[in-house]
Length: 633
Image 1 (cartoon, rainbow, N blue to C red):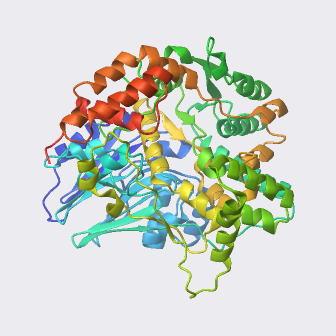
Image 2 (cartoon, rainbow, N blue to C red; image 1 turned 30 degrees about the vertical axis):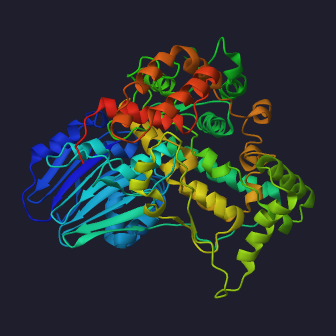
């Protein structure tokens, strides 16, 4: 949960420390263990420290190399420490027996140069100034667990963990970037480097950046190898290998000096984290910090309660659980408290409940909070691996999946066969260089709600502004769909929002499901071994045999607090929503027509308590515009 920021003056003007201080003051909560600066003429770095791992206590960031030519500031937890230390020590880049994660990143850069990030496993965002080259190098982890924003001009580069740090620099306009605003209103991912502010970009996940006076270059330093495949003779072998990798991912995130908490529901994702963490703590006394879980408690709306699934896991391994009184924190309670952040209008529907959980965890001494949010994109999803089932000879399973998909999508059996067997087979078997165009990119449809004005969506022209998601040739069929989900900018923006929200409470957010080793494994195995329409998250469920108490394993399944939201939207939060729709800032600026939005509210929200992926972004954007000031375009 540390924070970073910096200024590079390519015109050689000296960096003012007071500007760096202004950048850190906007996110001072990120540095409970100290805020430190390094300035030397035209370059300045800052680091906001939160000591979590045993090694982090020895860190003194920003870190300088022994010769003074390299500076590093990093928000990082490196998990393949032993492997890196062995390689870098053998090459003479590490001489001390005890090194910090920052030391490892710096040594990796000295050895591998711009390829160093591909050798790092963990959660990280870092920037490194190479004074000899007069060049800044930066990188961000593959699953967007840490953020990196920047603003580049030929005169100056600014970078930071949060957008508001950049807005604190004199001369940086808080001007809305309308294409991103339009994409958000359409619940469309936009481009991965977009932010809600003009001239400010984010470094996409799994990308690196090099900037100097001649320009700024961004490229993906890591991607899925389409030719890397894992094939086992037995289905149980996939579950066993996954379980070993998952155990390592959980163990890495238990490497903490401070107590570790977990937001645990009855779903597969957090339940698996809880069971594996409980197993590790129980089997290794004294090796790991205190561990406890936090679960939503519904005393009246019992249909929303999941503790009958999650509590037996905690009881089995003997770790405590704090119940969160969920019915006291309905959507939009105490609004504008729990409202959007300055950085963007992203805000969870159950933000008040989420904040109550984090505040409770912080009050009980937690330093790290684990989640299972990446589980959905890693082992879930609406994926039909028809070709894989056919190749495996599972005709019974194939027939059941084809029928289920057809019923779900309203398609005939021949249509499903063409989409999920014949088309993937054609792209897999078509000889290279033939007339068939390879499937290398994917572009989601831009579908605006009817209250967005035609003038606005014509002006921003999203259909032509949005670059399609590049997909490696050879990643086809069910693997292609998994790739789309894993690297969808919508999910990555949600991860950035989540990390920022945890940081507000002084908590380091950590998710074992985001481990790169798990991502590589999942993309290498047949997708019908991962999940099926008729057996959601099948791999994870099988992997938990012998780890999770069997009654909980059999019942695992996320129960959403929909009734809490429905009642709030129809009653307690109704007046708050109506106030946001009245005298709309969005309407005043020509983004929406208020009449169809009001009609949707009256018919769908008030009458049925339904808030969809069109209405909520619009509502939160309205709150965002009212709460903060912006520069005129």
